[in-house]
Length: 142
Image (cartoon, rainbow, N blue to C red; front, side, top):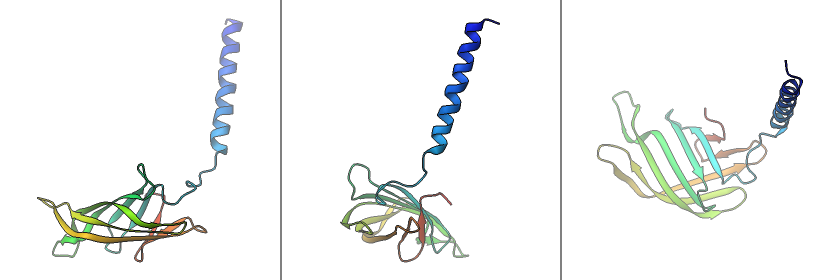
């Protein structure tokens, strides 16, 4: 085997090991602001919810509930449709985010359930979680 070829492979292996070591050493804590990025929750009706904060302005949010019971339920009380809302915060500080947005039920055809639905989250820095008054929210998809 060519000695130069062996040196290149050895160098490549060393670089790979160092890169993996550095990647593993990077902390996995969330962003410095709770009002940036995606958060997940299981709603009281058992449906999956997601909110994304940010998107160009710290006060913007995009919310989806994949099974919104306010949009209709089956005979067993299980949600049938998703709901979506996009809005801008009325107030934002280190621990609270509040705002209003139209809540749209994704039925066929879609309709606005509430044109001025209130949204509110409180941040707990000790647990890195949000609370909306009903369910805890985490940065991890359940």
